[in-house]
Length: 103
Image 1 (cartoon, helix red, strand yellow):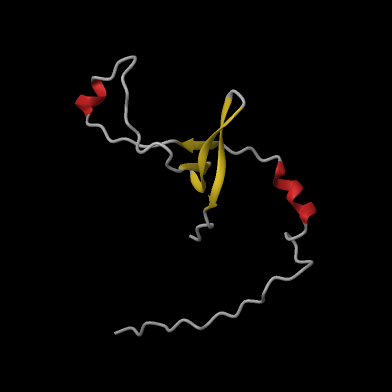
Image 2: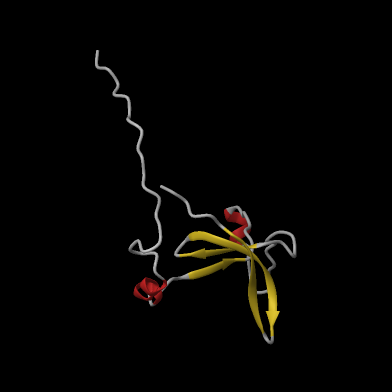
């Protein structure tokens, strides 16, 4: 039988000032990277028969009015917020920032 190795504890040095990547000027390198931002107003589940019956003017219920919408960047949830009217346009007021997911 093989023994399962016991992992050794890892000690990480805390990041401090002056560490590469923490200076505000370094953000300029990624500031121009394009992201696809999608705001999900709601979701609905339909069976195939219901989907085939949709026509112009059909209404699909997405959930309760006034609920939070999801803000996704390149398909990853980054925030939640509420829909607001800005002049003649719609916008999203961010109310929650999603903590980064570690993989």
